Length: 168
Image (cartoon, rainbow, N blue to C red; front, side):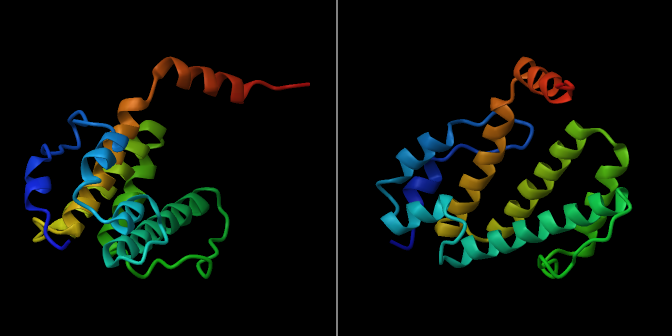
């Protein structure tokens, strides 16, 4: 299949500040009749051989590298640039990541990093209305929203409290 008009048209709009309209599992279930087995697997497999999946994996790796570079600088450590490819990320995005870390607020940093990813997925899907790229980018954006929906303040506080305890 190369066009997914009916399926893509049935998907609710995703807004970074909004609630996810379904879980990633529900999305997979809804997508199954429209996608091939290989396309379904590519949604969750970072090593998929689809162009859009490879492009996203490279960009995401580049973003992780940019984050590692900022964190290393904050700790006064040398960044091992040869380990990861940062060639695909533009300077403005790298600058945005550096600005996020200046706040020093972990929640604000995480939210900002996810917004950068969400925005990049919007850019990747621009002009792709009824093809696999649109489906792939939608799924990745849905995962970002779902992650934030599943965060639990009480559970998070407990994890933080337990990780800060000194065990003798």
